[in-house]
Image (cartoon, rainbow, N blue to C red):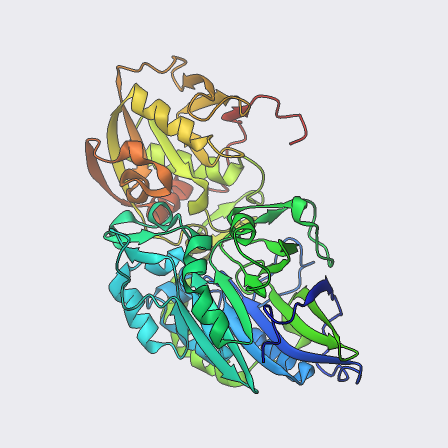
Length: 525
């Protein structure tokens, strides 16, 4: 009996009831057949934290997320599955110190049934990923990972799994980020290929659909939706991103739901008849999707994103005990004061002061002409006041080594063109200013470059450029750096930032000078 897509189609509607652990059961007229609870991009966020939008209230954290998930499951009184959209481990010192061990322990405690393989799952090599998979009580999935020839699948990269529970069969098909080779250290995924998502799903869909009542795609691909996040689903035209294109390549008669990730955004929409949800990141949201029979004949999908405020539940004591040894192991390090920041430094917009501060640190400490920092490597904001090692670790958790490149001006120009090739600039610079026009075609957008000495960029002259080893080996799409003359600067990016803040004592101020100038910046876009 197919109760999902295929033989019976569910109609997507809004469902934004407030969280209530003691909520009464659904009326006899409405019967929830299946509830899907999903998180994504956890990034080792084992401890609760407040967000700019949370009004000072702590959100998430392992000890609070578990009772939230358990309460949402109990309130349904129905079959429930729990999914994770990938990037579970990398991101905090508490998780990274033991290469993700506590994050996997927490996911096991959450009762996760399946997870997508995120790009940051490869940050410590395939061998480390496989070791963490061995410790997980759930399956890691990716239907689009093959060897570099595209013909063979690594045995650890399972395309899909079947969950049988409460008389239902739920097929979950995983997708890894197609851009993984440029979003993690290329050496860590050497010999692997990451194929197009919709095609990979379609290859396994006939078997999954034939075996299951419901088919869910669990993808580490995402989207952004325009406007301020709100409680109601948004129309598909308001959202854009790779997961939207994947949904358009699938059939709503065969796929019942897509759980997305990677973009750390709130997504609640429907594309091509398929509901798509994404619950922010770092445990700051839980996607709740109900498949409901109404009056015995009509069928609906009701989706919402819950905010798991830590003060609304009693923390799970056993999980808190599990984490305590890991916390003790790092507390002497995380609490160490390393400087002061005069004003709050938040990530926002096309270019921000925190990015300029980091770029200045790398250029000054490596004694190069220019520094380029990819925005994706800046992972957290900084509050004003005393800054600890733990605070800065959250900003730069990847422990990248700095490399001093020797490149001709034309290569540096190509790197700057790459930095402005997207919808907005995606890098921060030191040692130069650049002007660009996003209305021009990619590769021809930079209209002017002015170096710190006031001169323009000379295509034939050699320049020294400070970058992370991630960028130097072609990460984040900087393929023009690959193979260029280079020397290891003998420095870690985080250490460089700490040393630079010490130079700027007593209270560091981030540079306020704009360095990336967009033509028509005052226009609506």
